[in-house]
Image (cartoon, rainbow, N blue to C red):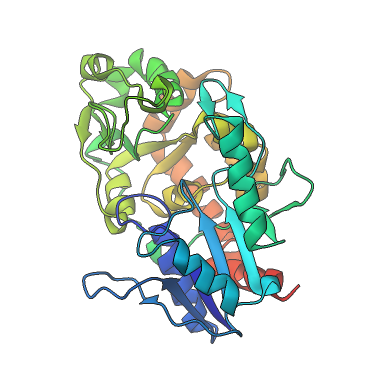
Length: 349
């Protein structure tokens, strides 16, 4: 099967790592995955504008329905050539819902934006999926689009790390969960040691920040970060993410409040376990045991976060063994090969 991904693909954020994983898995299993758009010799991704009626089209919506290498005329070409039953919409951000406000976060700014997004998705396909075990709308089904890739894994010495804590990711409604984590670390900073955050929007507004957006989307407190001597660095290419995560004893796995509310799985759900680090979860999402198995309980901060963090710092070998066991579970149950076969089944329904 030839599958065309429609996705606003960027090298320093989003699901670029997963697109690469699907492309390799397809080749391994005798299928083909391409990204719709004009070819670019500077890109490592396989772009194509060739469309056949036997192809399948998968719209991956993450932050926008726009095309990076095209426009709405391209949508017309896609829907006119590929039958509706061979088109799938994957809503990664929970925007295929009515207006939701949650702890300062939201899926749309207005009811009209929500309505327009839903109508647009409905115009493309009857097959709507979200990466959550509990979709709100009755016509939405579960598909954990993101996946784990054994080739990402970094193993090695877990002693003598450069940092106690590393976080890689942009600040988009993430200050609240980051602040809650850092308030705990603040009291045990001597035990944790050096810390770094890599990404846009932490020590200054992100380039895409707009004055008319709610403050919560971009809010940060540079002075608080400075008081903890946290080094803030610019974003990095997707190919460097797991390597940089591996510089820390632990990496917090945090989700923006809306994603916590909707129990959405993201690329970071899997990438962190491939790094040579210990993932620590601020909260116990419903999807955690579905994705990782019961051993993930050992990596949840729980009712005494400071005690858990100190235990991780003092007993890294114990927690790395847990990470290795979870890696085995992810290889078997959540690889890109497994996901691709699930996707093909969805297309063939």
